[in-house]
Length: 465
View 1: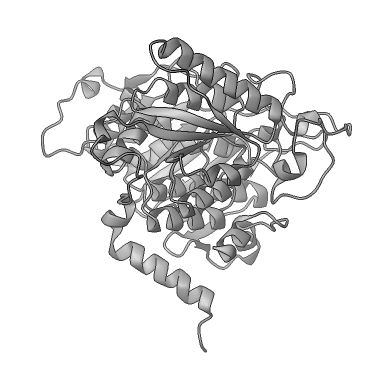
View 2: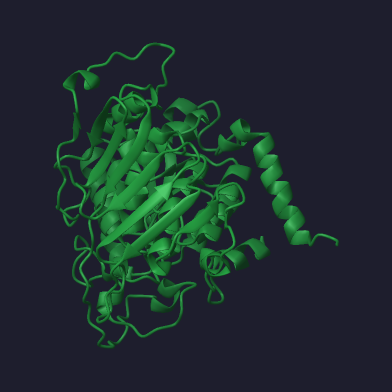
């Protein structure tokens, strides 16, 4: 049987990427504004896509403090948030750069128009989860370097496409897994991978849960919100404020975080952070489990329908078992033959409205001597990043890899998605991490992708490209 053109192309892309793993993971196409005779004095021109809670409290401040970059454009489907972001950025630069000419920030209501802006070298994407994959791929195709918030994608199929395209186009990339740029997480990974707790056998990941509820009362769409585009490739449904984001607040957690059409819940919301660290410490950051099983409670009333309490067990080919449970302390506990290490954010929060349950200590071990262990020159050492946004900007300038590459980001998120599928089906599933397919379970395989409402979606974007 002859192979279809799409299959042949997919195989070609994956073969090419595998054959040049190192080269394809690192960007080589450099923005024109970064090079040239005046390179040391040039600023990397950033476009901020998404001006909500995370954009305002995490990504814009993280970029605004950098001397090597300048936010020159902001974009959001809510015009109120665009204007708020413009004033915030211009006001910050007015205070920071009092001796320089005032900065004027461009505004956009459609990210596709921003990507056409030749003055923009790179984009920071801080959108709802269902709007991660599409603009990342569009940004890579437009030749922009990319910072995107986690999770990497909503489905495994989307994630695979994003990883392949970003690497194929060799874009400087960073995902918002800022724990990779935090000292205690890096140290915990180094100690585990260098055998300081003996043979690793179990990893316990503790994550919070979100409350159920949410109003199902239909409301008129605010005139400042492009709601039809906000829905993107998801089904057309009525507007209510609890489905989208608060109209009178940027700091409060939005309702879309609790609706499965736009977010899978804490399993990807916090799971993308902790599972990434877990797999990093397990040395499985380029693969996934071979077996996974889950159970969870799901709301029966209200608008918000993401999972409640849950438990997941994932087994890896190297013999390690990862357990994910909302009753565990929020963090990652590595258990080995000779001891254990627990790592978390301690009392730190990313945003004011982050869940504050069971943070625990930032770093502890069964024996304090483990934490004081000296690492030798020939031991495994993590990427030395202490500033996640600064690390991305350094990658743009040097074309060296940042703390997290697209394939690692995909594998962390895909494991979370597998856990979600396990929770939905409630049975043990066998997984092939090489071909990224469930073994002998067509119902589970059907959940690796979702229908995409026209004219949006990754599939249509790739066909157009």
